[in-house]
Amino acid sequence: MADTSYDVIVIGGGPGGYVAAIRAAQLGFKTAVVERKHLGGICLNWGCIPTKALLRSAEIYHYMEHAKDYGLSAEKIGFDISAVVKRSRGVSQQLNTGVGFLMKKNKIDVIWGTATITAPGKIKVEAAENAPKGALGAGEYQGKHIIVSTGARPRALPGLEPDKKLIWTYFEAMVPEKMPKSLLVMGSGAIGIEFASFYKTMGADVTVVEVLPQILPVEDEEIAAHARKRFEKQGMKILSGAKVNGVTKKADSLVVHVVDEKGATQDFEVERMISAVGVVGNVDGLGLENLGVKIERGIIATDGYGRTNVPGIYAIGDVAGAPMLAHKAEHEGVICVETIKGLHTHPMDKSKIPGCTYCVPQIASVGLTEKKAKEQGREIRVGRFPFIGNGKAIALGEPEGLVKTIFDKKTGELLGAHLVGAEVTELIQGFVIAMNLETTEEELIHAVFPHPTLSETMHEAVLDAYGRVIHT
Image 1: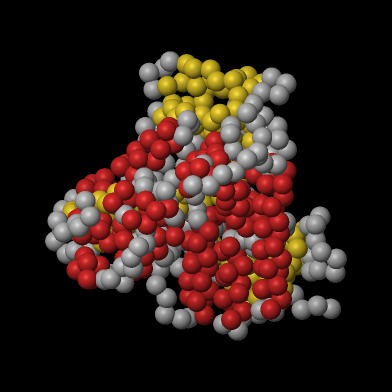
Image 2: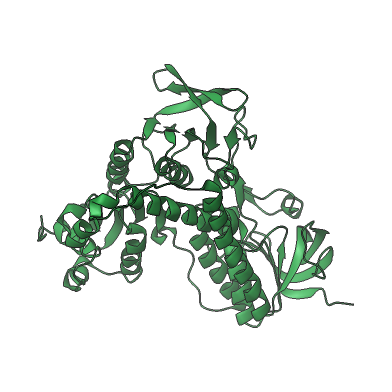
């Protein structure tokens, strides 16, 4: 009979779960992952990765449409949405297979099914329909340490529940059978804006409705305002301070009733609507309440090291709270496992987790916004540098963008950085590293940035904060 006892059992094989499992195996723990559907979780299969594949197709299509801006010519430009979707799904499948390989390489058992924690150190698994032939499955298993990494699912608003036909979540938005001519996106966070950007670039008439006054609510106000102007310049219609009050469904379209902050109603007839109003943690059905695990506002409460209030039970990733990002989940997984091992670890510092939105223009940020820094009573220096002053940006045909830096006036500490423009999701990590190393403005000013690169905008934004900017 197979041994069903493990040192570490991870429930959920998404980014947080599979990374935690690999680190556990590296540290000598006998490890298993319980997964009910697909390794890699939502991020790899239905989120981060496939959306970037879609957005890449949209980006290339955009450049083809504007070929003459680069001295080129392209005729009979078009796209096959089924082929675009197929490529996206292929990218996910490739990476899904890769995660399976990593499990085998690190001698991690994959148990296929849905897990319930029946007692500290014990789980019961119900069989999964899609379990590979001969794989571990239904049964009872023991684990000295159980890590919950079950992720999150799309939030549904009463009366506006997705029906998979006219009202989509990101699942349906990722695999359209045909390109809708018109689309309304409810919610302007990263998920909503990325889909709005994709469908707009591919030719759909797109309207975005955001209940808060500012789109991209977690971003710096100035950066969000810059992005909004760019979106509207592209032809996207944006209504902020407004909410969807209901819908009237037709055979192959729907009328969306939108109420603004003054109470006035506007109706929009569109072929499809995407509900992108956030996600909720998958805490149900795990048996946590019966064990006394503390749950606060729909997420599992942890101490910064992944530990819950019940010894031997841990939580990481989306199910452990915001920011609900794959890279946060991965890092939490490593911290959690290393803490279990007894290594010297540091608690998760959420102030240094970068956020990226892969729309056009891209948006990336880390640390405090200008508003939050002021709310904390900080005396600050703010630096700004526009892409129009950067040679590489102009050569790329991407002169619209902005880098903004926020420093503590007394200490020179970098408090936050906020970027909008081409490839800023690749640039932000420079500021993340600087913040983690507690780099001061002096050290950043003395650093030599290569020319010509977009990264020079980062240097100039630092210089601007201290009255030393060169190229504006």
